[in-house]
Structure formats: structure tokens, C-alpha cells
Image (tube, rainbow, N blue to C red; front, side):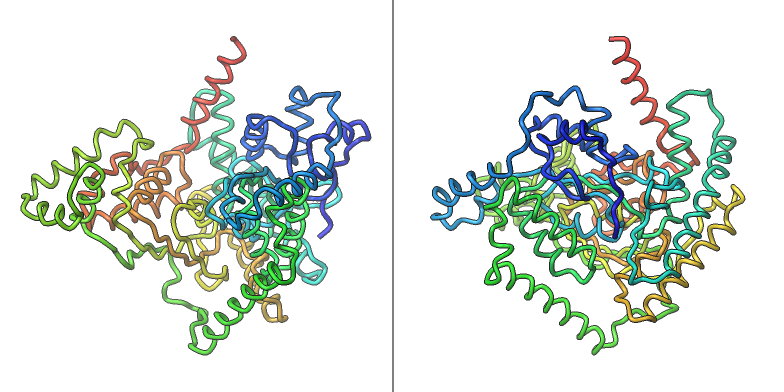
Length: 529
């Protein structure tokens, strides 16, 4: 992959030199900046069209000291010597949790972003398809998608055609949204209309679409992430694994010192690769490959397993205040009437004024395991919840894809279907030519469906369902959240009843209009202050 250049002038390179570990290439760490500035940079990153280095120059130049010295890579080596002298004698891996770094990973495919976001103990910020249109060319690249000469000229021809359909449909869908949701002209309304149009067409974007990501994580998390990347079958993942290693080595080398060692990182990578090969071998041996024409080729949510009951929940909520064993508490709770148990749960949860008011750790005594089939776009949003177990199968066209009703109403349904056909045809060509199916998935549009598991406790279920059912959410993941709530209500009605901030409204809307109005009010206040 030939990555776009930031086209920095000599003066701009000098201005950035104190604050980034690498002035070129798609991966670098931020250094010598206040934590608040780094946080604000990453927050703005998700809606900014360009790269982080360009963002730093364009919008945060007043945070840069013109007299700052260039970043010294040797400072990391000196810190490493101190670290090894003081800490390594303890032999405690938890020490690697005490240092962190902000790393930018740019021009990553939507296949790779899911791999990068897999570790639980980290913070991730991804450029949003809700705010960033993909209809224009990137200088020196063309449309924003991952390229590799090994995929052949047919691949680039197909991707160009699919992006061309996206670019052709975007103004038509935007005009339809504008006509369908009348309102007084305002900057907030304009942004909400643009977000709605981009939401409706995001299923056209291939998984090869390029994004920018910001990561903040500890040294321990980076070590595990890099190892998994280096062991991954995708060449893109292995390339970024090496690049992230080089960036982290500049700022906290001791925390990733084991990765390059053959007897440590080398053995870990070998173990991960062998584990992957064993899974593939047994799937083939047991005939568990997904067949074409899968009868489950439709959106669905299935509650596979429930661990715990409401007695266990109540006992867990009372445990910290009680002075008896949990089994004694459960025995006492069984004597309560249904009304008393309902009142007890209501009192223990309390009045939740907003969805951020969540019950105590006792809610973690219940677990739910859901199997979900949704479009890849919805999966991308739900996969970001990291305080749960997420496992997903490989993206393929076998579970089909749908066309949003509104896209048909806008007159672009046939073009959307044409893009899906081109995408599936190219996937099957790549797979038939011997490419790993994970490589072939670059060609698939985000509208194709994927099967995955969400395994989570009741406390995290409350957080996910209330957040993802919100009026501003994308309809595809709102539907998943609603169905999860309904199925929890079937087995634990009292638990579902405490999820008081689930939004079940279904009328057509500009999903982002309320948020954009609040944002505009803040901007107006800031200008007049």
C-alpha cells in the first residue's frame, strides 16, 4: 500500500518535529503535548476530513510552542535504562500498565480497524462514516480504499465502480432527505441532513474503505495488540503491527521490549498462528464452513444462554452492605413475595435520572449471550463496546445484504443493488483465486451481514442497550438494541424494567438533529462569550 503524503512544507515539518515520533508514514505517537490537548485532538479527529498531523497544524497550532526542541528519540532509551534498573527486578507485568501513549493509525482499512480495536483495555477513536463523505479523491491515491498489487487490476476497477456509485448517489439521497424532513434552515439542520444521507449510504462503502484511528493504551495493551497484529494473516495487519511497535519504542521502549525477542515475542506469535491454523483445520474437518444460501441469511438476534437469575442479582446487589454469606442472603430472599422483590430491586437500582446513572456491580451477577446477524456497519458500532466478550465470524456475502427503504425512496435502490452485486462478484473472484477469505473481504460492502456473539453482564447490557437505542443512533444497530431488550424482558422482566432509558420510538427522523442543535447552541455561546 502506497500511503498518501501529508505534503508538509519544511516549516511545517519543523513545527511538528517536537510533537510526533514520525513525520512520515501512517503510524506515529504524540509526544510533548498536554494530556488535554491530546484528548481534544483525538476527539476532533473523528469528524475531521484530514490526517492528525494536518489537524494539529490547522486547528491546534496555538497549542504548539514555537521554541520547543525537536523530539529526542534517545529520551526513550534513557528512560528504558532507568525502568530496567528499578522495575524489572520485580518481574511484575502489571508495571507495564503504568505508562501509556497516544498513537495515530492512519489510512487503515475497515477490516483492520476491527483488529486494532479488539483489546479491551484501551481507548479508541475512529473516523466516522456519519461525518466523513467518501465521494472525493485523495491526492495521489484516488478513492479512499486499501490497495495491494497482489489483488489484481480487477479489484481496483471494482472498487472504483462501487465508490463511483456512492459518489453518484450521495447528492441525490441528500436532496431526498432535505425534502423529506422539512425544517427551518440552520447549520445544525444542514449537518443533520448530511449525517442522515451518509448513514443511509454507508452500506455501500467497502470494507476496504480507509479510516483514521487514534489509540490511547497502556504499554501492556500495546504489547498484546502488536503480538496479535504480527501473527495476523492479513499483510496489512502485520505491517501496522511493526509500525506501531516502532512508534511505541520511541516513547516507552521497555514496555514492548519482549516483542522483538525470538524467545518471547517470537514464540507468542508462533503460538497465535498455530492456534489460528488449528481452528481452521477443525472447522474444515467438522464441516462447519458456512454454506452459500444459509437459511439464517437475515438480520436476527438470538438469546443463546442466560447465566444467573433474579435471586442471584438481588443477593449480589445487597452483598456489600450485608454481613452474611451470599447463600444466606439468597435463602432469605426466596421468602419474599413477587411484589416485595420488585420493590427491593427498584429501591436498590434507585431513581435513574439519565442513562449514566447505572446500578452497582451486583448487576454483573447476570450474564446474557446473544448471537446477532446484522450488517457489517452495525457490527462496527456494537463491536466497540469492550467491557464484554465480542466474537465474530469472517465477513462474507453468504448472509446477504439489504437495501435501506429510504434509499429506494430516493431513487437510488437499483444503483445500490448494482454495487452489492459488483462487490460480491469481486469477493468470489478473490476467494476463488486463492486469497484468504479475510483478504477477499476487502471487496465487500459494509451492507453485507456478519454473524457475531455479544456475551455481556446485565450492567453492560443496560449501558449498551440504552446507548444504542437512542434517538440519534443508526437504525440498524437500534434494531439490535431493541431486540436484545425485548428478549431480556422475556426471561428477566424486572431487570428489563430497570432499563428506563431505552428509546423505542420508531417514527422517521433526522437522527442527529437534536445533538446538532445542542452543538450549535454551544458554538453560538462560545462566539458570544
